Image 1 (spheres, rainbow, N blue to C red):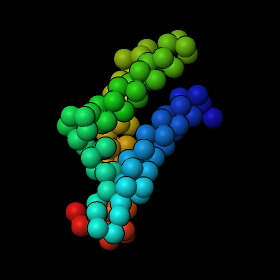
Image 2: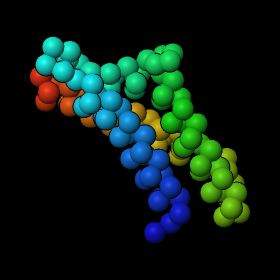
Image 3: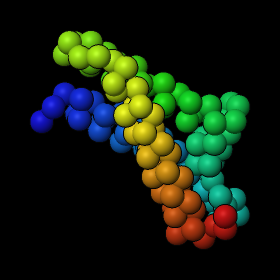
Image 4: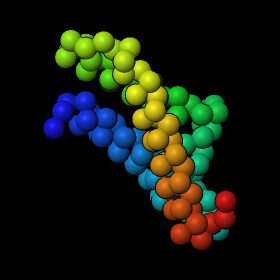
Length: 105
């Protein structure tokens, strides 16, 4: 298994778990939805978390490329695509969790 795959999988799952945990642990019967969407989309400014995750993907892939003597520019688009896929998965997962726990979107 390649180092790039392992690092990207860890980043993907780690950053996916944060809005899911925020949604799950802050939802109450009277307070649906929880703060999962706020973490994912809004706080501390619009799309701050998404920008952070995108930056981490790009930097991690650039570092791996440099260590493997590959051109980092080749993996910037790959990193941004991965960040886009992560965002879609996160959005759908938090939305589904909200619906499963009795909330409305």
